[in-house]
Length: 485
Ligand code: SF4
Image (cartoon, rainbow, N blue to C red; front, side):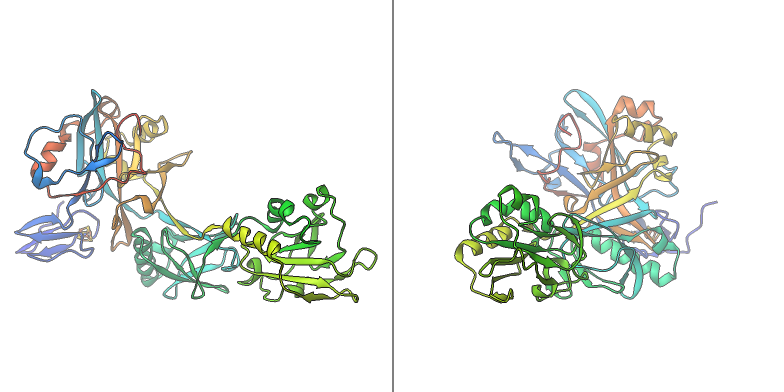
């Protein structure tokens, strides 16, 4: 039975909260309002149009005010889910089901803003610096909001948000997690603290800030890889190089690269566990010092020299995996490493390590399950939508951005938020995240999978009857409709 609104109010039925909204006010999520006694989506729906010039560049964009009402045949117009609104319960057809014609083929795009309880953000932070132990809880404003997950090559990885934190803890935990997720999706800076680790500021597409220091470089490789890359350039200028790394510290003359160049062993001995020749694990503790270790003085990892092999006067370079830290030494008669001025030829290679480091960035990927009831807004037979996506008959996009669809059951999609329009993400107080999602397919396929055919509208109809905001198409994204998609 549908609810009856109190006098002067409208009921928003776009999510289970069912806000009763007074005239001129908005509901709890600020996405819907009561304007003139009508339930209205506060933001206009975002529409893309690209016009491609001879050079292949996008040259102009349609503004709604400029449209003279003539049919837009074969025009590259795409109605996105941003600002489209939601239907709830999901058995109601999605808010926009838009037909178009592309190269003579009738297409349809089903557009909605999904309400996602099952979703999270996977964060890649390009830094060697240790953020905290794997599995450690990540806190936002004191609340548990995620965890540290498996480190990847040159990057620390976090998993933030998710249904466990949205629904499984206190009300405040859910609310803080939801706010954090929305900010991450909307490319805003978010500050988190890793239990037993670092404070990190994360912002999609920007450099991470670790314990107040903005990270500059993503390392060129592990210590062993750095030896492999630069061995030849060091040859003749130094007698030994130690590349300090929290995971695999490399020693040039022991390493296969040094042997290949017939470099005599320097006899240096360092802390840690030898893996294979010239490759050492656990030379120090993890930290924010040299190469993601806790050391600031590289000599603390050197335990001595093999007297039979060591040669006084040997030239020794110690360097980190980004080239940000380096020191040069000469071995004296008592086999002590004495600091010395680094020759230009050696410094050049250290600088080349830095030159080969890419800028350190935060990558923010939204991961969400669209395999649930959301599908009912697309078709009366939801499993057919899942199959159609797996069979590559239906393309999924989020705010027009391409997604990766995970294999296996359901529709689990992953998207880089920097490829989505600004402010694509919203929230509802259940709490859950609101995100745009579009399904594009041939009209004939839509009919086959049991689509809501009676709700298909034209782009012209959308332009005539809806408030739209036209934004520039991100030329890096493939156009969602057609062969090039
Ligand atoms: S929270 Fe937002 S979407 Fe949900 S009922 Fe209220 S206004 Fe509508």
